[in-house]
Image (cartoon, rainbow, N blue to C red; front, top):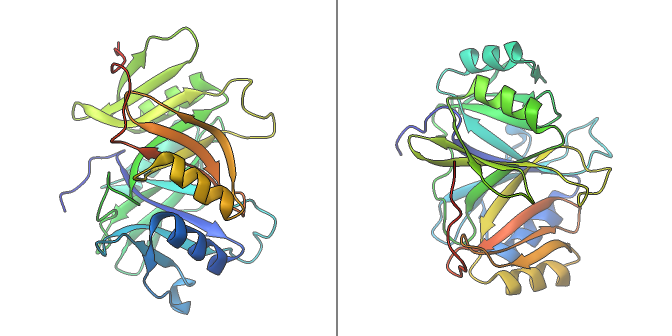
Length: 264
């Protein structure tokens, strides 16, 4: 797989207090199967789509993290992770650890931006990240939802070579961060529609074949519908949470409506 540019989404994982329940949920929702985890790597469990391609990972909750709500963690590509980490620190971000090599798989570090957005950097070794994207059960998009757009914009554009495009809309403050002329990430200013207790976070999107059927499956399995379904030029989408409270979005990219918005 070709090397992803600095700042491009490269991997995603989520940590759960009940790993087996999470695995069962995503198997039912996305059709995932799993590589067996090993104790050496904390039972880190990679998920595969129907074609056997690695699309994400599920992780048991680490000791000391009891009570921390599960959430999806997005990794951004960092071909030189030491340099990217230093840029993040200089831009006002907080490194939750120093860059850590994970056997021959690669090197990672988790970062918090000045507005509270948590994400990770990944410098690939033998693990090059997503083996499939944009198809059923796979990652296709992510949005940085922030309580302070000015801080988040200043930070991310200092760390990564994003070309910022704004969607002109009086109702929402939304930017698209581009790399190599194409969209890499979205950035949305959180509004009063978000509950006050929800911090800044990264919303990860997974492709489904039928958005309404996916919502029904989430609810049948004990999860919740937070927002949607909504039709858009990008697809029919909804924001949901699994039974353990981990939030994410699902999107049917084949069912589109309306014209693509202009960007400035």
